[in-house]
Length: 337
Image (cartoon, rainbow, N blue to C red; front, side):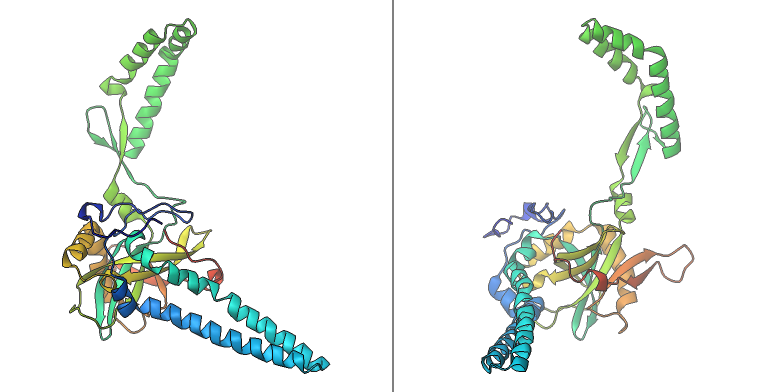
């Protein structure tokens, strides 16, 4: 990743993040971050430091025990000593991942995927963030289809008409076009092509429906305790977040783990926070408003990733949430999208 900006350029908020070996955020915050503020408020940072301290404590304890047992020079103490050293290696080797996470923590605030969250609990202050679970390997793009006059038509009619026009070209002019090119008459061949395919009755097009594509994406919900600080939020208030993505389900093509980082941990600049909120689509905010009442109960916890499913018309709620099992993927490396 590139270095964080010294000052916020509001025009860059919501633009794509920096591409790296893991991927690229389609929408990042790109705000000026306050490292002192992160050290003060970031609960995830405190969790990571706790993991490092725990690994060091147990690793050094078993290392010392192993050395002491081996120095006793008895067969059974040597055996136990080797076992203790193996356990020490496990703890000290495992320390690498949280150290890497701690080093990359500041970068996540400004260059990882920007998303929206709403307050769902006030004691302690907790938000629910809306995340895109798709890994990008199987994007579900939705298109709108048009005829030569700009009238919208169905996908079926589009497919039928384009097939008919291609068949007409193949039947009437394709051989002539090939002959002209073989004779070196490229300009005549190009004019023949342009004359046929520019006619309204031969022109059909498709365009991505960005709103429908957004609705078709596989979405998830992650809860995160924000805690106390120099802020005052109530139920339903909007808080922008950055995020970290980690292991995937290759069969489903989705992320099974996403952590979110409220940007109020990194800045108290109201202009930056408002601009980040505005970079999140209104559809996402509407979806969060629908989901928020569903996750206010104690059965929804901050340690679980939930997948969102659209309910059929007439159901009591618009969406339902089901937990994603992360146990099978816990050994994969955590990354950023």
